[in-house]
Structures are given as C-alpha cells and as structure tokens.
Amino acid sequence: MRLFAAVLPAAPALHELGFAVRKLGALPGADALRWTGWDGWHLTLAFLGETDEALLDELYARLGRAARRTEPFALRLHGGGRFDGHALWAGVAGALDPLRLLAERADAAARRSGIPMDKHRRYVPHLTLARSRTPVDLRPYVAELAAFEGTSWQVEDLALVRSTLPHSGVPGERPRYETVARWPLGGAG
Image 1: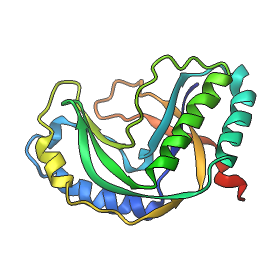
Image 2: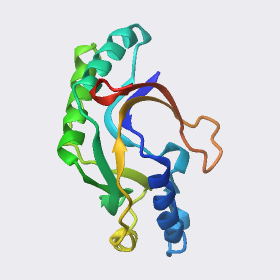
Image 3: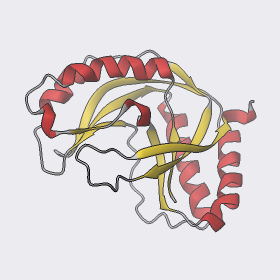
C-alpha cells in the first residue's frame, strides 16, 4: 500500500483556503492545471511510498512514539508558492519548528521500521493545490495567494494516510486518500 505521514488541517482552515483557491480558477490558464481536491488537502510529513504490510505493526508503534514525543502546536495556512512550473501550493506559518521536528520523527520512524527512505529532501511545509505535467507560469497564482492569511488551528495528531492513484484513465480523476491511523500528539487523548 502507498502511504505517507501527514498533518490534516482543521476543517475551518480548509474552508478558508477553499474560498481563496476558488478565486484562482478565474485566472488565465487555470483549466490547464490539475487541481487537488479539498477532501485530500494535507501537509505531508514523510512520504513512505509502497509499504510492505508486514512492516505496519512496527511502523504504527514507531509513529505512535513520534506523536507522543511531540506536543500539540499551532499552525495556519498562509500565502503560497511554487515548485518550478509544476506545482502550486499554499504555505504554512506558525509553530514551524515543531512541525519540522514531527516530520523528522515520522521519517525516522519509517526508516527504523524498515521502510527505505532514500529520497530525503529538505522539508518544505506546504499544502499542494495544483499540479501540471508541463511547465506553467504559476507566478500569477502565487501573487494572488500572497495576501491569504488563514486562521490558526491546533495540530493535535499525526495521521498515516493511504494514497490510491487513479487507474481508470478518466481525465481529471484524482488520487483517493484514506486515513488509516491517527495518533494524538503529546500522549493526549
């Protein structure tokens, strides 16, 4: 199964962002982008990829420990950015140090569970809004998002999410996301 560890923003934060993203659809070229769905919006902490089910018990235990060792913290969605001309994203502000620490702990939990984590990159907190297979000038979208300031919410848990890629070949089909486990931060709950 294809998995990633994530922070799932609170519903009010997603609604605020959704209102801002709706406006982006009126910009020239918006129909050339593959927009992500609100129901799948998340902050990826560690992408585990295809994971052997035999490793799940160990992974669950280690992610649970990572969550218990991290106290709850506040974040807000803020502004936007881009990765080259291929991905548009909303930025994150607030308690970024605990977020980065949780990402490091999730990555370490996966590695120690036997999951190869070869593609380690510097963690850039973001929520992907749209993608393109060919380079697109995303600067107008980033400029439109610059003033976006979401309301703060409390991150209270770490989620493990299963990603099922589209397979029908239907244009516009999106990946499906299913939360398979959650662990409270700081041992709460």
